[in-house]
Amino acid sequence: MHHPDLSATRADMDGSALRIGLVQARFNPDITNALAQACKAELLSLKVSADNIQHIQVPGALEVPVALQALAQTQQFDALIALGCIIRGETYHFELVANESGSAITQLALDHGLPIANAILTTENLPQAVARQTDKGRDAARVAVEMALLMKSLS
Image 1: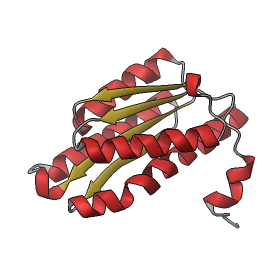
Image 2: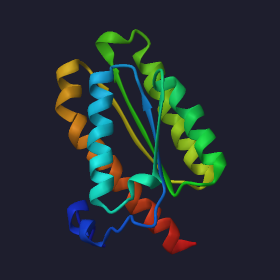
Image 3: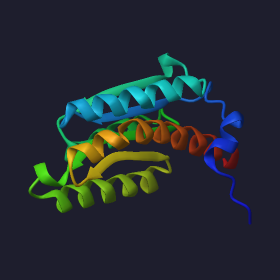
Image 4: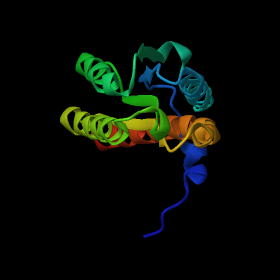
């Protein structure tokens, strides 16, 4: 089975009919704002209308899942995106926050049958986070659109 890379399918991705919800953790705002900016820019380039993007903010990564759940329960979105940044050097309970938020997001996606792109960066230090912020935001947008289109095609 041949798996094309994401860039090969980008031309086929038309998000014009999609509604996407973004939940951004404000903790490490320089990083998470850059993530959100890259993510939104990519959504727009995939033809998702700015009017169909809802962007909300929460204090930190542990608050992301409950906000995602609230969006999922509205049944108004085709995909959701989690944006955040957890840095080991700054968060004494790094593993707990990373694991709890990650598993909660996965469980929400399964419970609601809704694609959720997890772009909560987990890095050892700030330079690693800065190095990844743009790519990770862009990738999350692509994953959300691709999965939303897939789910529509399967239903």
